[in-house]
Image 1 (cartoon, rainbow, N blue to C red):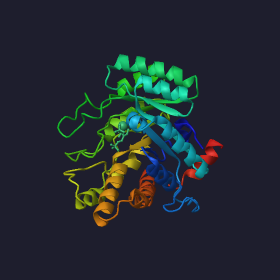
Image 2 (image 1 turned 45 degrees about the horizontal axis):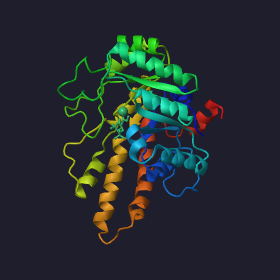
Image 3 (image 1 turned 90 degrees about the vertical axis):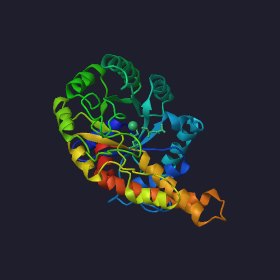
Image 4 (image 1 turned 30 degrees about the horizontal axis):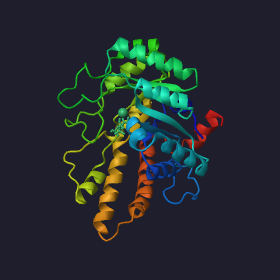
Length: 326
Ligand code: G3H
Ligand code: 13P
Ligand code: ZN
């Protein structure tokens, strides 16, 4: 069942974070739904309540244009029918104003992200407010972003890039957004924290304190880039040198400080890359695309279960269902 991120965040706030996973194709969609229901194998295996979790499906503009955006909607609608116990939000990741309107008007997305974080504060507020007004009129909720993730690397960390708590308070009040993505040291992709500094909990704490009580925060660029997967990719012919990510032990402390949504895309790509490289390397005579797909789906589902455990979200599905009242 599709719900809004607001429904999910009310249940999660201060206790755990909801995993927000990017998808691009069928195999990711199936692995994602299975994993969030606590199972790795067949669709008809029973849901494991100790591992099942509410979740967020993220669709980027790149994913929407990879084939045709309608295929993704079709995939998710089919998954909803195959996995009727699942509770999830459908969210546009890093939207432009135009993409947000397209998703709001489609009636399919329950949540959109307007990313005007590269604009100056006033302009970011102005654009976000326009999207909020149009989204709220249709019951869609809005994530906005303040601060800049991409530039936050080892030697350029500074207050200019990280989210300013005072600005965050002004931004939330004036824009009317429902959740806020904050820059607290993470960055997108497989090469984070080359200096090993980790998350800026001091900044996160200040942001939580200054915002209205219970206001949901979002952490982008949060893949942990597990060494195990990097090693598997490299052992099968890849060349990922110096890849590193967020320390998984930092997810729950961040959730306790109001981070309700943790974005993961890169880790899923690593699982995909490792599985495809391994299957083609191990079976050079095989050219059936389903050979790797069959390995990928349970591997990815297993990875999702692990991630949800790290977020404190595993085992929360039934309690979230009761709280949401659906
Ligand atoms: O934050 C960006 C996400 O990882 C989506 O990436 O635009 O390549 O699909 P993408
Ligand atoms: P990663 O690149 O760390 O997976 O971040 C994904 C993300 O923030 C999607 O919006
Ligand atoms: Zn992001």
